[in-house]
Image (cartoon, rainbow, N blue to C red; front, top):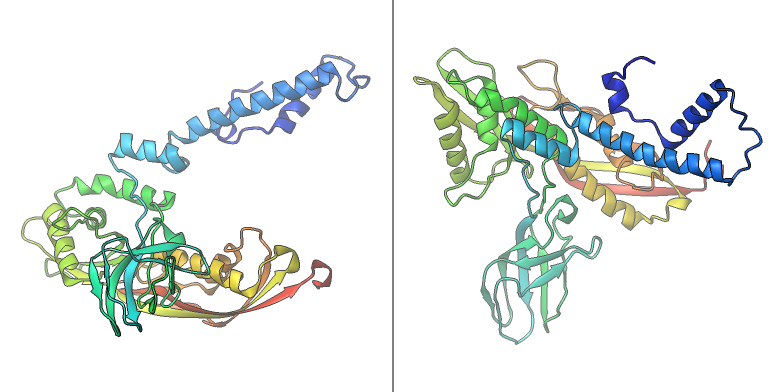
Length: 391
């Protein structure tokens, strides 16, 4: 028997494959197994041994994969990034935005942070106010709200958060801005930061150094700016480095944040005698209009399907690179129409969607080198069909 290869270590056999190997070995040893009854002692012991051995092989596989950046996943990758690259996985962030609170009655209310609890009926996610405010009779105001649960599942479009958990007479509220939460840093994103980390140690200002430090930028109070995409444009020969930055929500939200990104990036990455230009990415809102063909067995009505896809598409767009996908270091690229359709297919955990007809966009989306695509709205028509009717 030859020594196991790296591929053997990283692709463990299943319980059934181990059982098959045992019986094949017994046959080679001229052991007659045909007369062994199903459920008999020997067959049962072989089944138990195979199951236990499969667990051991799986653990060996995880350990082997965990030693390499390209193959390590999940918590194994988190451990590898921390110990070998001194890079920690970025945690999930909370969806936040603003809501208009209206009082049509004669009551007077004072809300302390967390007193106003709102809910998005379609997703069931909860949101609370972050600042104290007084709501007078026959008046309305705008307040900041934040999701109670971190991650992309709490993302909401304008108007999605429109009910109060605890009702107040005459009081209503609805969110007036899109709210986008971000899941914990994905494996591909963490691998990219690990690869950029060695560049951050250079005094010569390679592109990887700018990418790394822009993503690490924080505000004066220590809170993360959440830059998740960086593009270093080709040098123009005047000693300046142009760095385009974006967050999962789209463009960086304030000039103060751009200044903090500059301070971190220029201070840590720029060689002496050069200048750094931080360019805020330009957001291009994308409306998606489509007809979804779905099996009846999925038990998803149009409203439920809309909720799933509205949760999936923002996550897709927040991972797309600045300038779109391009094989060139300069100029713009595209967001592929098929990639958007794939994100829609993947939104249904039951895999009941079998056809997506998109009318808008109807072609790959072109972007310039400093543009990003962000999800704006979804217009969906669902066609339910029994599997027997599929042609």
